[in-house]
Structure formats: structure tokens, C-alpha cells
Image (tube, rainbow, N blue to C red; front, side, top):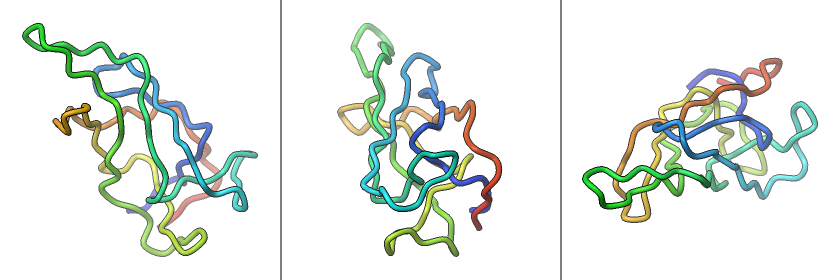
Length: 111
């Protein structure tokens, strides 16, 4: 999916706008804006989501990457683009909607 490449320093929240997303990347070679570019092999973790429908806590804890750049590979893995059709998941793997990417670099576009 074409769009700006997602990177470690991107600012994003869960779909409830409570939890902050941190991308944990294994890529240290390819940088944009001085930060490693995210790939499908990387983890998107959330901290601070307190979503509790009906009293049972179901906070977002991780991101499921649903699509990536088709033509951009980093260390053999497809790069992630923003906004992509990604999904926030609780610890029980219950989907909670897409993460909201507030800002990321805009100079490098992947397709």
C-alpha cells in the first residue's frame, strides 16, 4: 500500500486514543529522519490503553500489520507504510480498530 514509510519515531495511538504505540525494530541499517524504518517483522506495542467495555479490561497491547509496501524491502522484509490497514489487538487477540498515526516522516514514500 503506497504511503510514507513508517519509522520507529512515528507518533501513534491506539484506536481508543489512550495508548501510545512504540515500534520495536530489528532494522538498524535503513534510516529515515534519523530513525529506523519499520518492517513487517517489527513489533508495534501499546502502553497506557485503559479500554474496559462493560467493566472487563481489554486494553490494546500490540499491532497486527495488515499490509506493507510491495516494492520496498529492508533486509529482505517489506517496509510498513502509513497509514496502512493495521489493527490494534488486546491481549486476548480481540481487534479494536486501526491505530491512529498522528505524525511520521513525509519525505520517503514507499509503494
